Image (cartoon, rainbow, N blue to C red):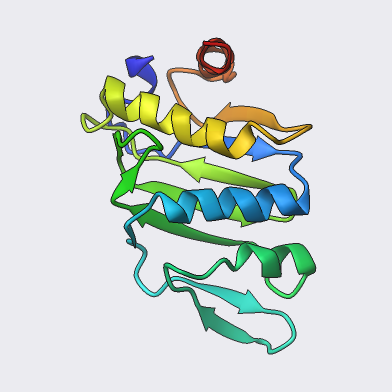
Length: 160
């Protein structure tokens, strides 16, 4: 599994959690923000459809509900100081919120050790354990072009 995370090739692979209900997107974003100590994106914001302006995002906000309601365009930000439900440190994760899913992007590199990967899986399990129709995809990783390696590890992890 380390081969999918450890060597920084400059890319930002995606882990997509697709086919979520609106409530599952909102709850998933809440889980991510609640396990994060900070937003590391400079000036994080979303576009308000009704106000036709940019609205800042603070760490305590949950603007995913505005995406679900159609009030906000999909948005992206990066969380830092992330800890899994059992306290494992996870490197910075990019989070893209859209109407039926959440995509996580990550910078590969040496900070991704076994504990960090396990922590990421713990966090993903927290998001997906009650999701009825979630589909997990791994994209843009040169070491896993079709996503099958990641999906195999993910499937094994879910049933430990």
